[in-house]
Image (cartoon, rainbow, N blue to C red; front, side):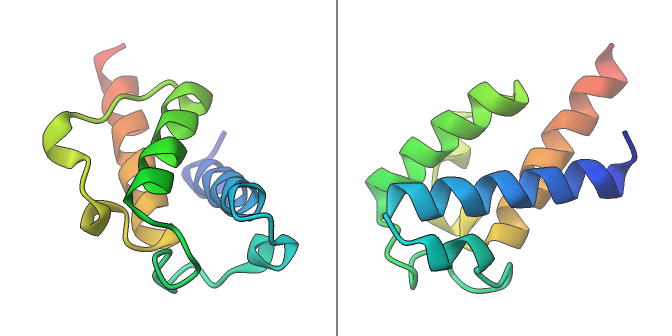
Length: 92
């Protein structure tokens, strides 16, 4: 899978999970640069989302990374997940 296709998949998954968690289908089309906090995601929901992401994409974030600013937007979230996955690919 290309980097672009993988990143698009990550973005789709994040949008889908945010829409499910906040019970708002419209968030499935949320702008990737909008702050997820503005959509209604609080710190607890962000941590729950991170758990879903870690399981789905087989990545792990360290405690020092579990701050909302590290995952402020879908774009930042996707970049961080893609970077983790790229790091895993390099180790393999």
